[in-house]
Length: 382
Image (cartoon, rainbow, N blue to C red; front, side, top):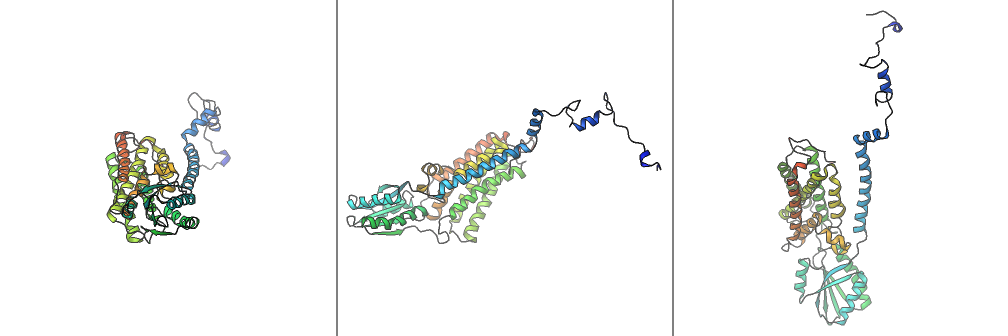
């Protein structure tokens, strides 16, 4: 052990680089290591460093999230905040040529501020069957040469449409002097008085469907393509069963045709999961943007679950039926309230999206940022 005072202790010599002077290293540190003479970084150097840093994607995400928040609010507000009827398919039975019937229809259109798309039926039974087939939303039955009108609505077809008819009928009766009686042919179940439960369970299936695919891309990135599809099928089946069980057996909010509702929810989850997987194949870390836009910004408000299609903006009401959320609501709605009248169309829509997404993913699976034995391109954003 040395007994020299601190100030007399030998100090290490500065390191000597080959071809450099002892003080060169200090100059390099002071100026950040740019060049042999420690030149300050240029604007290009700073930009190159910024592009390689995590700050660029963070900045981009900041603007994307702000835009998504604004678009989310705009989409739902535009679609649902002030539902307005446009063209409402309506059945007419009874006397066709009664002048008072024409006066009543005209007054009803004025009160609704909408055009009634009238469809004539020979009998009430034929009109009621059209309601069960979801071709019309209400029936005007004109009796006694237009001296009275029976208005039959269908809350299960669309509570918002039934509501505007029911609220307008007394006003129209007062203006025309024609007595009107209102009857709900298909009332909603007691556990779902606003008719929103189907929209909520379909929304859950849509959200969990693509969030599940996101989590697979983050936590199970090594899954090969076939394994990824099988995993999506598995969580869709289990998730659909869980949603149906909670809503029916647990909460008693809806009396579901259990197996049919379960399989609709499972198909919805699988479809939405594969939609994200498809977008992840082509857009990698930014796959959430088109997924969110298609399924949430457009698909959910246009689905007809919260507001019936005749009260949606016309373009949205038509587009919504061709997207997975709208097809899911349509199929589930028919399964719950119009058993025996199920249509193939919503299943063709869901199946078409599932087939398209799975096919594109499988054909370009080499581009997907996952699988074993390949270098992943990017992790999908959570």
